[in-house]
Image (cartoon, rainbow, N blue to C red; front, side):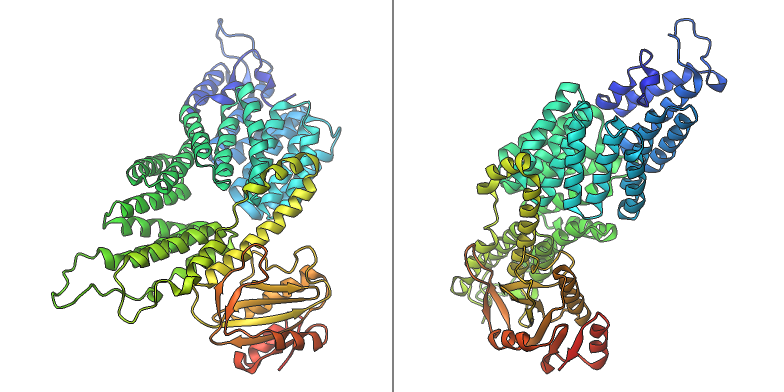
Length: 611
């Protein structure tokens, strides 16, 4: 028995939860509750159809209210109601309904508590999936939601394996199958496998449409829009996002509408339609602010889009809107939003002297502008690169070039062309469009999905490294360089720095690699990065570290190239030194200036520090 089965023949609640606005669902819940008298018995209502026995009906009503709360993002209420429904079904011996309610309660906790709920969620969902017949609906749902916990915990490979297991078990349950396809497509969007994501999400959208599940269809179209954007298919993205917005407007889904309108405003900005972008972003912000509770993440994204549109329209008040968005992203601890806000600040600072209304003295031949180095483009570029978004770094580099080329030349300033280095750095950062790989992704997702995960994870690490190298072209001079030796270096891409690392990799050969960090990086962060690499390699490593005071990354590598283009960085002798060290030894250059206390902190990570 499913949780809403006690209402069969009495109420269309199951259908309404899939396809009706929240107000209509609430009205139906209230109507059914009004049919009940005290103790769960039917009230005196001659025209009402006969209701099932009271406790099961009360449990179904609690589940319905909890499902609506979960759909609308009222997560505390969802947890309370769904836990209550699960307990009530359990008391009545309705094990399948109990376990399905438990699954929804776990999902509500995961959405509310994020990573802190993952371990307990996996344990409870495993218990549900392992109890009784593994082919039952509750086992499939539990397996699906376990993958959600794994994705939130950051283990994409485990999430994919679990989702594929759930997909295999979902053939008797087309409604669950459509939801699992949504989750699998969303995972591939996150991994950057946009071709595979698009194929799965198109299938999911069709299944949802056939079943009349507007909620699931809206989710599928929202992710289809993201996948199309990743493929550079602007018109397909716009069509999918417009479909999501229309469905969410019918449902009264504030979250989905705010998301779709914000994405559409960004698309309008890319197409040079700042007036349309401002109208779309304003609508998105108003919808997000009017939700209960307010959708602060989408308020921030909409405010950012409004600020960018106003900036493009020449509105001097744009900076205030951009700062509002940046402050909210910082408060929310949203890494992508913070990186985009840092980009906005750099752009606003670079444009401010050009748009200043302060009159210039007639004796001056041209307006004097601040040198480009006073604008901190690097922080935003590094943050975007570290998130594995080299295409965003490319857009930042392009915007910086356009602004500086349009500005009056500063006295004794840097030449605009720089010998073509800036153009080459931009071209290298922009080389990550995955269009050619799309068809192969579609084949792999059906035939060899484990291979697709390996490819997507390696590509994501490479994109992250490329983004960081592109960002380093904006950094001030000064690099810490590490030559690393270990037998398993260059195996399965493990040598590329992780998402948590502060490093970039500039070279790797069998048994050897070269990492570097901006010279301002804390020694503890460098030590932690090397310790993480040692763990990934599964063996002690040998590393020689040196300071390149004037070192710079001039250009990241192009596809097929053999490394970044560097200035004032010497690695040959450093590689030879690393090869001569004992396993676990870190040799420090005196120029680094790391004192004994710093060396001791690095030794505490399990290294032997020598000088």
